[in-house]
Length: 125
Image (cartoon, rainbow, N blue to C red; front, side, top):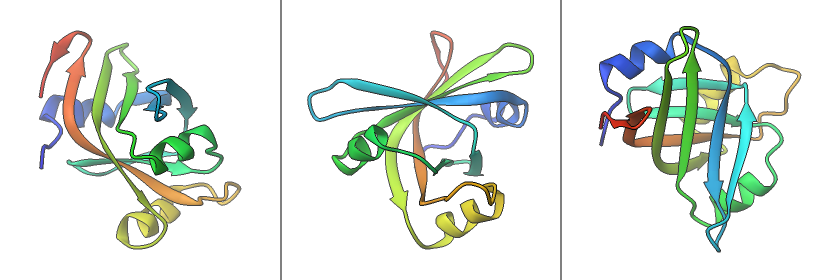
C-alpha cells in the first residue's frame, strides 16, 4: 500500500480551511465538495466524515475513486488520489467518531487510500 511522502504528511499537519473531495459518477461526471471534518488516520489513509453526503455517497457506492485537495497556511497545495473505502463500523469509523463534532451526524467514515500524490503539477508518488 502506498504511503504519504514525508513532505505531504507534514504539510497535512499545517493544512487550513476546508479540503475538496472529488468523486465521479458512473458516466464520469465529477462531483466536488468542500469538507471540514477531516483527519489523517495513518500514512496510507485520509478520512472525511460523511455528515451530509448525497451525490458523493452515490458515487462512492458505485465504486468511484476520489481525490482530496488541500492547501497549507503557507499556500502550498497538495492533491491525493486513490480508492475509497466506506466505513459504517470498525476502527476507522470509531476513530472518526472521536474527532467529528457532535453537532454533525457522522454517518460514516470515508477513507481515501493513498495511490498518487501531487504538489501542483509535480508528481510526488
